Length: 208
View 1 (cartoon, rainbow, N blue to C red):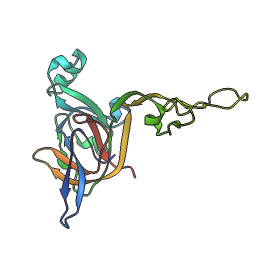
View 2: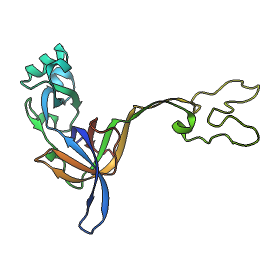
View 3: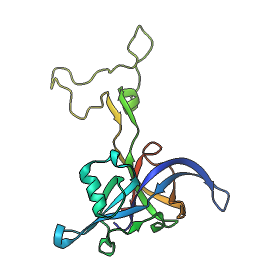
């Protein structure tokens, strides 16, 4: 990948373009992400860098990670991720990746963990229709017929059923960067992205 950075979803707002068009945007606090480890072909068999994000107190981490950050001369970070950048060889430990690596007009993919909804029925989870409320029916939101009659006499796998909804990794592809505020480490992207306010997101140059 050409560009990548870790960030935190701040929330949504709106902005106006030069022609007066109003567009919805999501504000992301992107970086700063210091490089805490450098992978090389000689030592690891591939090139990559490991970056940290979001400073935290040591009680929120464990001893191995605390020692890992101290070895790199950095403060303890809450998140740590490996980035396989095309120019990973040009980065050094201690170098900081900031929001200004992206420019207005760039197309990016944003990944995050969607909001969790717990155990939900098939109507909310899969947008299925409810049962009729006439002719003495008392089953409105329960599951109806699930499978065939005598043959094969089982419910097929991948059938849409009630279950755990949300709290899974979701990626929104090919969205546009509409503003970059390098002084405050903010990136504004067009439209919505997965995750709740304050959740971790991963921004990278689009693959499409």
